[in-house]
Length: 394
Ligand SMILES: *Cc1c(COP(=O)(O)O)cnc(C)c1O
Figure 1: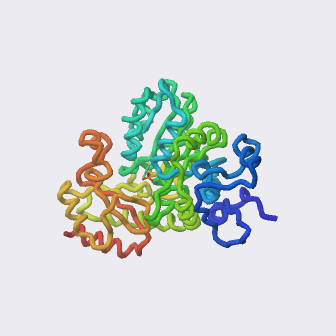
Figure 2: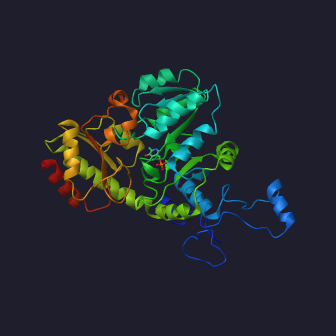
Figure 3: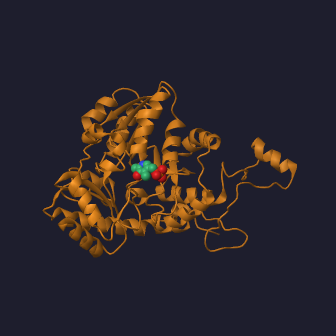
């Protein structure tokens, strides 16, 4: 008799959650690389479609490897249900479009991942949804915006790349008073460092591409919420629009969950060490990391996150030219727009990830020409510090 998974502590859930061994009694989770399923009889097929029999019928709807990933992530997150998607953006798209209709109002944080920004500022208005943007850290502005009824509140915390912290407990209270569901993009914190559902959020979305894989191999995403939202609102939308996760990616990401906590703890420890190092350097004008005492919302970050996160954003004097010189002088850290990888990666947001925003919007969200975003990996932190030291001197 197996013990009840909900009695397990988080590390145990991450290693064993969701596993259902096949008849071959394998140790590691099986990979069911199949698009379809067969029926023992015509009656069984008919019952599978009229709802009297629950079983796998097609991998756009469900697949055993994907189900294992979903069950494990739901256990880690403390969510009733989870639906996996092909990418993080498919998760954001499904979480929003599945519940919104023409005439609805959305209130969103202004500081967003640029593709989320595109969905909220370009796509939703095309379908008659009104979207009002609020500066992430302006409590009075949130209060004003949510004095009027809304259907959805959407935000990301910490935000990318300026690492602003939104007070999840406070915003969830305001959202619920306005009649809205709070949808949180938790990609940057990862399930290891922040649990938005426990702080009052209704829906959590992930790019599993980031820390959940953590080794730069697969795209993936997930939406987590209560069973009613997942089954009644999300599932019909997903079944018929097709953002399903591939079983192969689910298998890779499932194994990623087993080491998520270990990896993210090390990422975060090294990120804080490098943030302190950068703060000590005269070439660096400003360092942003929620774990630093100098972060304007350090206390809030430490209340709602288990560590300051895996990213460090810093600004060098001398603008774009100096930032590019630093990037080009690095010998170990790679220039890449991805994040949450075992390899330390660095990017210049103004010309890459946030290029699309345009100069005016970048100014408004505080992305300068000398700003660099470092995604701290799992290398020895002393080698990373040496590389940055050399590049800063260049
Ligand atoms: C990467 C990212 C996404 C999009 O995820 P993909 O897997 O690339 O589609 C969404 N939100 C945030 C905060 C991200 O960092």
